[in-house]
Amino acid sequence: MKENKLPEYILETSWEVCNKVGGIYTVLSTRAASMQKEHKDKVIFFGPDVWKTATNPYFQQSKSLLKDWQAQAKKAGLKIKVGRWLIPGKPIAVLVDFQHMFVRKNDIYAHLWERFSVNSIAAYGDYDESGMFGYAVGQAMESFCKHIGVEGKNIVAHINEWMTALALFYVKEHLPGVATIFTTHATSIGRSIAGNHKPLYDYFTEYNGDQMAQELNMVSKHSVEKQAAWWADCFTTVSEITADECAQLLDKPVDVVTPNGFEADFVPKGKAFEVKRNEARTKLLNVAKTVFGTEIDDNALLVATSGRYEYKNKGIDVFLESIKRVADSRELNRQVVAFVAVPAYVKGPRQDLQEALSKGHSLQSWNKYTTHELHDYGTDAVMGAMRWFHFENRADDKVKVLFIPSYIDTNDGIFNCSYYDLLIGFDLTLFPSYYEPWGYTPLESVAFKIPTLTTSLSGFGRWALNYSNDITQGVEVVPRSDYNTHEVVARIADALLRYAQLSQKEVIQARKAAAAVAEKALWKHFMPYYNEAYSIALNKIK
Image (cartoon, rainbow, N blue to C red; front, side):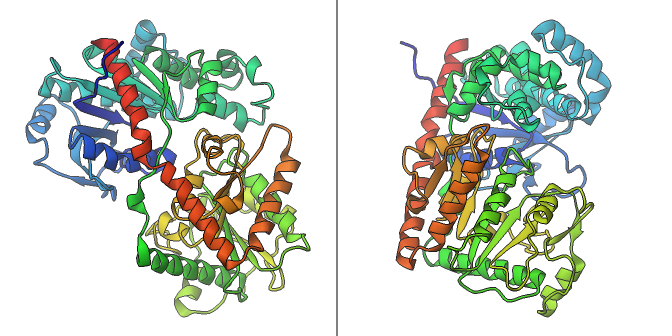
């Protein structure tokens, strides 16, 4: 029986360290607090220095932190910044500049082909940027490990996603005493198959990853991901549904599934929760009635979907069709405002809306749909669906739809608060995803006591079925396949209508049930899976 080994140092990298662009930021930033408790300042995150001379709001640089190593790294020509990631736990973070690596790009790619069979010949765009970042991170990890000494120490290098895979190859070659973990949060080829409107699930066992990479022009990304999975000392992913993808499309079963958790530190407690909720609800209603140019009932049901702007994969299309079905229903007995909060191609906040909000008057504009100006209203998918379904947001429409096409943060120009500070004000969230390896958005919702609906094609949905399968129990999971969209739309509309008719007592019970599901997903319950992954990797090399 292999010894249970724990790491002394964990060096973890992702494109989203101190760089908030997607769900992996939430994974790492919430897990960091738990890791800090167990490995105080022996956890070091490596991220991209994409802010350059501008102030990074997620990072606080320190000249004194790891001062000796900083001096040594600078002398060796490494371009790094050392400091703290400004999240709960405030772990050490190293931002790595990689622009100088591009002059060596071709030589690096040629070496990766010869040494690790990574096919970069068709590389372009974000592959090059990610590749040079990953390679530069590998050099920074090597410098740090040589500074602290590898001999006799249990050190793990944890590489997240294909974007940082070159760090794994660098460590394998130059630091054989360091154990490596590679985590894919979604296979690049699985996401591409789904995004290209091919039936991923009904035909799943017939797909060949290499063949599909050729067909979908994904050869390099698929190659680097597949080789990283094979070369890593431990290969992990975030859910059972993605583990199936890995086995089929990468020809490599995962060693362990490491589910994504959440940290309760992000959720206000007691009276502070109700204060925050009332503030958010007031803000949402105020912005909505200003855009619509009409009053909205105080008891209106505020429903939302959010996440990346993947119109099909995230189920935005199904969300809007479900809302239309609710709008046409005779069973609806209260007003509904549906919010689509997905960052799109925006110019910036609407100036007329900013002025109206500051002066406290309603807008009288053709644009009763968006909080921010879009570059192109004609080709935007959400706007197209709103036209198709005839959402006009008139005063007498019981159901209205508001599109928030911007990242919600303290500088968005309209809400000027964090996503969580706005999320807390919603009554219900719907995430009818088609492709969703995990699904942080529904998990975040239940953490804030908001009942949510997702599908059986999301990792979180499959996990949540162990605890709930009705909107009144906190989470409803709708069975979804390649060809049952009409059924999914009907199920979602039914769930929303049922929830709209609940008594206040029943709503309170549903919100408590949502929080109970969220408690099951706290990081303290999921960290043992990571410890298992660390042990597997360390046992491979020692």
